[in-house]
Image (tube, rainbow, N blue to C red; front, top):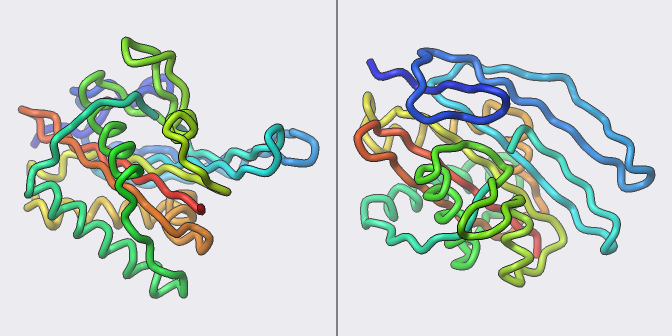
Length: 225
């Protein structure tokens, strides 16, 4: 069975050889009052993939709070196949079902966020990394998803991003791959927090596969307008 992931110094090198790896998820926050860093207890999960989540709340221009698990990407134009479109629709349904159980309103797809999320997933596949931190490259100086949203003039009070990587498709059908990816995200506290945040109203979902290996990277971008 093909190995799933290789995690080294916070960057995932696609093509690693580690089966049943344990992917740590660590949350950090910056207080909007005094800028002090506060680290939450690390949590771990044994999965066939890795997940990371990040969130930013906007207050005033110089008062922003980040909460993140580990890691993001540059823009590119990608055509999404009908099969992947169906998978993204399935993922949205799974997310909204979880939100309904938690008493949160459903998220609606936003075409701009969809484009950002799809470009993020494709960029991580193309440039072989897995991180909320976007490395500099021909497309730009790098940064985080929030920089992409700002560049696209997306107005928001709060925004977040979840990313997940796995190769479930080498074992499961696509529908089960999507379902298991959502389970992995829901089983991690900081990713679950993004998925169930009641203030979020819009979402973009990106999915990209690495040809030949079956590695899938899913990106979810959330926004409170």
